[in-house]
Image: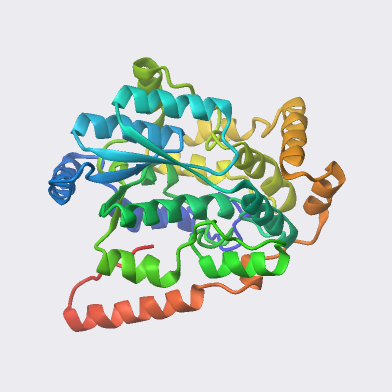
Amino acid sequence: MDESDEAITFDTEGVCNHCRHFDAVTRKEWFPNEEGANLWNDISREIRKSGEGREYDCILGLSGGVDSSYLAMKVKDWGLRPLVVHVDAGWNSELAVANVEKIVKHCNFDLHTHVVDWEEMRDLHLAYLKAGVANQDVPQDHVFFASLYHFAVRNNIRYILSGGNLATEGIFPDTWHGSAMDEINLKAIHSKYGERPLKTYSTISFFDYYFWYPLVKKMRTVRPLNYMPYDKQQAVSELEQKIGWRAYGRKHGESLFTKLFQNHYLPVKFGYDKRKPHLSSLIVSGQMSREHALAKLAEPLYDPQELEIDIAYFCKKLRITRQQFDGFLAAPSQHYTDFSTWNGRYRLLKKAQRLIERSLGRQVKVYS
């Protein structure tokens, strides 16, 4: 990590705040050991109990990427009965579709694919490009998680399994962007720059996310990979050998939009290279040496010819010209906080949490 994170600090030993935070805080929530195995046994027992008498005991969000694909394979080994949900936001690569099919067939899971209305998705993408904010992935990320939550509620399923994990995602600079779940921010950006109503696009409100689903519906999102020694390269090898899954060559390469956004839009417009937090996460979790990470970082983000092909496809898909695309990159940037957010509500929630903890004398979980 470097000064592309405006809030980064280095101590007298030259160690940054991200590494210190990982060791002091994040590591306590990561259990790649026997303790994790015991914790997961308890959680999986709860999941099975919650699904007694029902067809499914959990929902598994599957993108086709390595994390969710490996998790699907482990879920089969654990004997859980998930309904696999895949959200198609219009940017799946052919390889991603093939990987999803291979995983579902190998595990013999039922698959539900939620296809997002493309015209609404396109309008939201264009609104974000016009806004010039950093996290252009929000339209995809928000609808993915919102769809999982709504689908779980409709089918009376309490547990959602996510491939998110601290071993590969333990470090990320908060200054780069806000929460993808911030419905207020999403609607504020779309209200200013969008051109058509979002009639079918799934969103999730602050109340639903922090109160209705976790407290009333007793829903819980679980990240099982945090309870095991998850090694990404080993996971890729196992997926390739067991089911013929094929790697994408880069993180989140299963989405053609995310590939271009992370490897071109962010570095050019904001100077953000998402490989830095990703590689840093692998370093602090012991999966990669700093020297190896620096060597990976020295590699080009894009092959020039591949970049031109991806930009041409991107423009055709969104029905914009190359000049418009270049204009989005050159236009003044805005911060997500230039638009309404749910940050104020979240701060009040955290304040209430601290007051409750003081009165009870113990910690209270707030989902985020």
